[in-house]
Structures are given as structure tokens and as C-alpha cells.
Length: 182
Image (cartoon, rainbow, N blue to C red; front, side):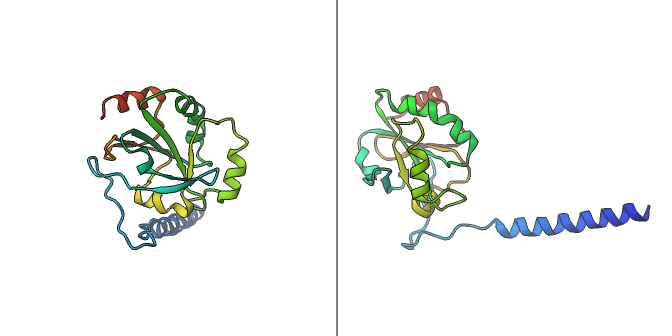
């Protein structure tokens, strides 16, 4: 009986220490280096006007798609749910629609590979239709207030955020949602 109490005490202490460490690790991200405050990311707000680099080194801005609806998927190479949906999304990106499909990965942020390692890995994948933008150190992930991977953003042709959803979105769901917005 004494042994059982002793082990229970150890388990309680370990559980308490883990709880404290977990709580200490759950902090709010600092604001972007330019001093701006994070975007509110509420439905009806203007989407953050990102300017990022794609895997070819070209600059891509949200403004490049002015007048066109945009589907943005934030994902990570370590996320199994993200990876499971890439083939389907690659198919969608290769089809002719009235919207643009963009994916964003944040190298050096929350466990993601470096930009060079990610590019080397991704270029060996069979996803030739996907536009992948690199959000170095998660600057825009903070603006988009990413809490889970993957997260989908639906942006109207006017640049207004219409919907944000964490988790996988099928092509059917993406098309259905974008068909309902202007």
C-alpha cells in the first residue's frame, strides 16, 4: 500500500510539472517585426495583403489576383492530414475555375523545414499544379492567425475574407464554398 501511494505521488508530481511546462509553452506569438498588429481575420475583414516568394523565387502578392476569388491553404510538410490532401488539391489547381488556388508553407516556423530543405523535398513530389509560397519564419502565419494545420481561407474577388476553416477541405467543399461567394 505504501508503494502504491509513493508511485501515485510521483505521478502527481510529474503530471503537475508537465502541466506547468505546457502552460509556459503556450504563449502568444510576438507581433510581426514591422510593428503592425495582427490582422483580426474576422469574416468580412480585408485579407492580409501578403507578398511572398514562390519556389521559383518569384514574388507573389494577394493583389496579383485582384478581381479573382482565392483559396489559400496554409499547411506544413510534417502534417499528415495536409499531405493526404495535396494530391486532391493538386488536381483542383490544375483545373479551370474562376478562382486561384494558393498554398503557403512557413519555413523555420513551428517545426517546418528550412526553405532550402522544404524546396528540395517538395520538388521531388508529384504536385506540379500547386503554387507554393514560402512564408519565412511564419510572419504571415501570425497575421493569418494560424492555429492548426491545414487551415483554409476563402477570399472574395474584392479581397475580403469570406471564410476560414481549420482542417482538411475536399475539392467539393472548396468549389461549393467559392461558388457561393463573389
